[in-house]
Length: 431
Image (cartoon, rainbow, N blue to C red; front, side, top):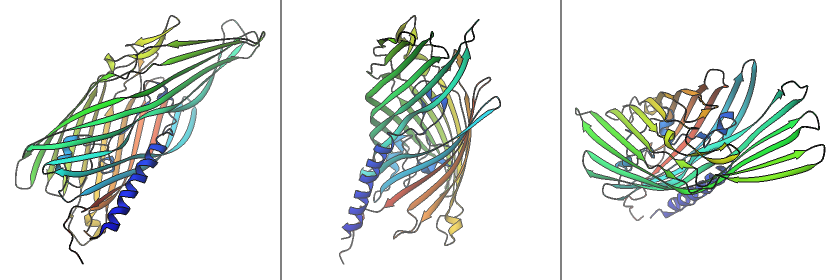
């Protein structure tokens, strides 16, 4: 029996998961918009979907890991053990008036696995990002009726991540249900410093920080409806549970009188003032044989009703006016000319996608930037002993975040993901 390759795969997957946990401690963004809310929310899709701009609520394939809808796990092939890992790199351009700044980032995106536990039941596990915070910039202003200028510096880093396990069960042929249960952890640190050009002005610094250690629960449903011998529709529904995170956000305020060197420090507690929102999603996909897939998703996150820490009258408290409900619509397609052809280019998957999203936070009482995104990608089959079961997915995505009188963020992102797919549970012949 060929245990050696299986052992190498197990070791490799463990190492990949360890790398992911380590890499997630680094920020994957330079956006000044990451200072609001829980930061820039991460794309939860896997590499097969990235070229389709993250479509996945109605995606149901036996050779793909799709954590967007855990009901899809039940489609996994009975002989299959899959691992999916991905890296990304991005270039961002921030524009405000005539000023332009470029920034670069690289990130380990995720590491996930999927296998069949029993007939009609698939189990998935892995490490996924949730959000990223990473920014640093300065601005100057003049005090009224004075020649004194103030230099304000803003900085922040951190983010949240999740280790999850999920299961999907096909109850009967059209209907499958599933869930993901995750441990959510992370830390957020944001700083503000204001320094005057003359010594009689107080120097003020504020440090906002919070450590998160909680759970995250999501559920999904998929309904398969054949409409011809080669065509099928899949309806996907998802639900995410909203709840308080049990965290204690802190605000440490330090003031220093430069003329007397007298300093004062105060620590404010916001209490249990941090929450995850309820979320809902619906997706519909059309599958034509093994060649063509088209999907559309709409998701809603109810941030407008959750609590988030903020300052009010020299107090640090939970506020419900800093966030807003967010909406996202995504459309994507995947086409492979002939998955069993001898010609390489006929076995390649060609993908395109587009999306539009509204912000989940407010900036000085106004809605944050809306997001427009376009993507394209390839799924390249990798020859192995079982012919094209593994796949290298390469995708490119352009994301534009903009709002009137605010910074415009244009980001170009490349994601490279490897789906390793082996028939571990096949019955081997003894040589």
